[in-house]
Image (cartoon, rainbow, N blue to C red):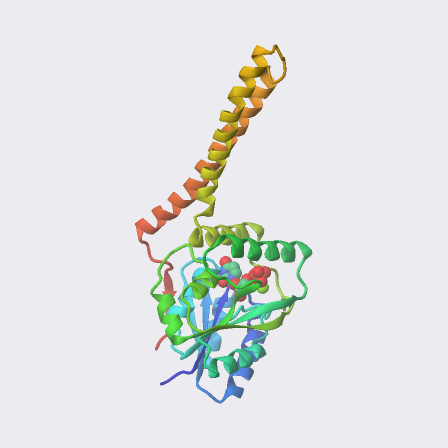
Length: 309
Ligand code: UDP
Ligand code: MG
């Protein structure tokens, strides 16, 4: 069977939302009149979402659950969804209805016009704390500044990808994934469409600060060497300062000035440089840890139940 649209949604303990999500996706996708599938990736759910997905798959052949052996995280879950998708166009969407399924029609329209990556830009975000909005806005802007890839601002993973793009992305098996960056990196004909991001339909965010920081670190390390270069810049600055200080201090000694002497100045400069060195080591460590993970070459995820074809 030839499938036109694959809708890919990662699911992590979303039992409060799943039936409504399925209902709205089905309504929208049926209205296209094309063949479609809904790939639900169960990212280690423990709240009965798994059973619900099996049930949905039982009554509706459009639904194809991919069930993970444990929680692997949002980006990996989406990756698995892309791996299992079969459509000519793949739509990545959150299962919590923050991304309105009805907007898929708009994305599909642009795809029909010939665009190969159609990403949804969050022109407005409802029902999120100022902290989330502020950190998100800051994050997108820092990433934009320090990476070499043109990653669009205020754009999450809600997007439509042409089969060509999906195939390229599926061949990129890096483990610390930042899919938005990868989708920009591949090139092709891209366009953004504005949408209003809704509030979560029910339940709580599955992205605590810890996971947000992880994602931010993955984004930076995957697409930039800037943090590694900071040590070089600070090193040059500190060395330059020291060289400048030598003649000044000699001059002061000769003229009998008492400025700059004493423990406090020594302590401050030693602690400052010690701190900078430790931070640089930590930055190195981040990159080396990622290298090590890649070298181990473990599978990106473990599936305990794959959909039947
Ligand atoms: N999610 C997931 N694994 C995780 C965390 C989240 O599959 O470890 C899913 C979650 O079920 C939802 C989507 O990723 O469909 C986005 O998560 P969430 O809405 O909690 O993030 P937020 O919108 O608050 O940033
Ligand atoms: Mg959400």
